[in-house]
Image 1 (tube, rainbow, N blue to C red):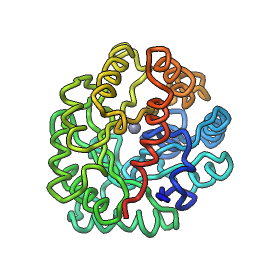
Image 2 (cartoon, helix red, strand yellow):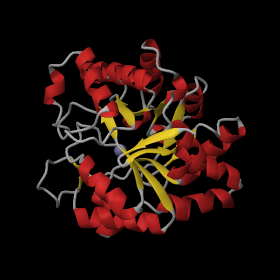
Image 3 (cartoon, protein in one colour):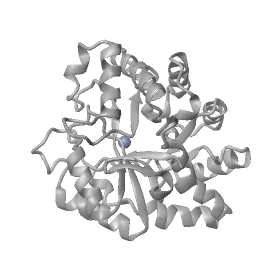
Image 4 (cartoon, rainbow, N blue to C red):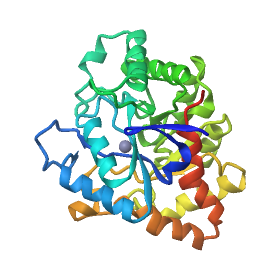
Length: 310
Ligand SMILES: [Zn+2]
């Protein structure tokens, strides 16, 4: 059995079911109390309802991508939401950006890489924010074509924490850039590339570039399906076809990375957490993808990637 660390405890990875590999369960980048802001996903009633709708549609797991630096990460609320809906939630530790809007990182500024590593390990093995609710993965990040000194310090600390605890690490890439450089950083501290994944890569729809990351054993996440404001889904479908034909179908995960009210049906907008399952997978099947391959994107690959290597 392989184990995944959720907010309600460790589970057999098979229990994850249909999984969205990078989402935001509770988040409030403006700070608490500003629930009307576009970037605030913090209203209990709406977020609970969104999870209930996802569960009723056959959704099994949400991978929560809010580390400590995202105001509004609230593992106690995530646990209650998970218990009430049956949706499994995997929380994370880590760091994203030291830019305005990501304010909750002052304590990390003065810490050494070793101290941050210890913080991360504590959140993975003991609990988060004084609870016994643990992180099941580590998040790292870089900026558009560069990495800030804080991000580098935290990415090295995070990769070491993942290496030593066995949980996976996945990262924010800004507009899909700097992924190959991230791989070099995590390799330099000895993290197994099979434990590493770059998200948002489809913002930079470049076959060669995705292939180079996959060739090193890493996973990738496409979280932009449906976001036609960047380019049509036909571009993503063609990339996925080519990558699967070339043997990378076991390393790709899909989701929608919805971090705004205007992404969610419960606030009157879309696509919402059911869109991949209800609209994008049927399109992939219609365009010639096998049921087996779609099952890999949404079940087998997340189950393998989010399992603890021990
Ligand atoms: Zn996100």
